[in-house]
Image (cartoon, rainbow, N blue to C red; front, side, top):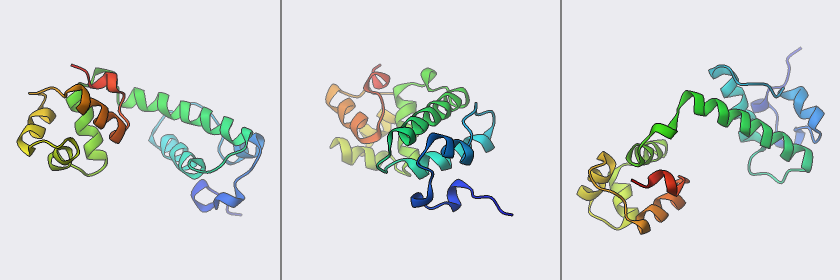
Length: 141
């Protein structure tokens, strides 16, 4: 008998109870990429929907576990603002031209920002943080 997986389960059939969600995907520490992929699928399935309290609690805990694993794999605390910005752009398949358009600056200046040769202004930090979901404090020099 084939068991349901998060991606094969339509949202309407996702359990409404915490116990039901645990039966579908057990909350436990994420130890490898397979665990991370499974958790990510479940997060994607639940995110963006109106959840009841039990579903919201489950999603909060699963997201915390995923974030903890992500930080062990990709320690961004050591990343510079320019590195974070390059990563954010890469995740969206964007580049210096997109950054230049967002900030209303010349493309050559956006390349210097991405190389860390120039620093973002306070106004630019706000735009980048809002657009790419980066903590503004992480973009400070």
